[in-house]
Length: 326
Image (cartoon, rainbow, N blue to C red):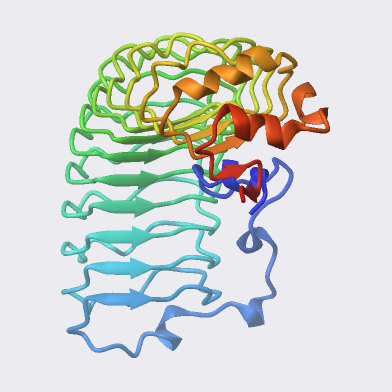
């Protein structure tokens, strides 16, 4: 697995602004499938999978009163509708469709997981009835504001990667959140996270950050992903002593410093930075749990003895860059 592949595993897949998912294109009328042509399902069933069905409209689900899981990924659906009777629904997947608005979900009060990623949403709204929601996936849309989430006190995972968000805000009530994904946005500052004390995973990859800050209250963090930003210094992680993965790849960091206290650190991703001083690399010997280090495409990696020196500094390393140690 390449370093880039490993760094991306924290976030859901992302697409470039001009690219849209397969369901976004124009489809000839004769290729569109009606749900009445595919719904020949036992009315007692609790799960229906209609992924890749070329379905254009949600309809004809009335008999399925016991349905708990409905999967409609990779279709041609433009509107959320005709779900009011599915009050037993626990999971609803609408990933990769053509939906422009969150609507008509008020009756789904038992819903615990909602995925409307890879659609055309511009706002987070009309979700106030979903107080039992645990996981909300809204990545790869056109959302510019984090808003209307105050009622989600049970939410543990929020995915808002690949949108147009500029500021971290309005998350104070999400006190049970353990995973927050905000990669590939336009965020310039780490802020307004103090109330999220249960947070274990924070992803802010591919934003516009220049400084690591305001993480003091996040003492339960085990994963911190900050690659592809403009960060120049490793700092302000004094209280994040449970960190197991620290991703700072593709930044502007010149020195490895201020991480000696991270006794649980196993994965340290620092490729594509500006580290040139072996003396600071040697300090990794303080991190006794370290198993993987990425330093490729730093000046130190051009040393012909790069791997040998790194292994001598940290003899317990299992992987350097993408290669297992012998």
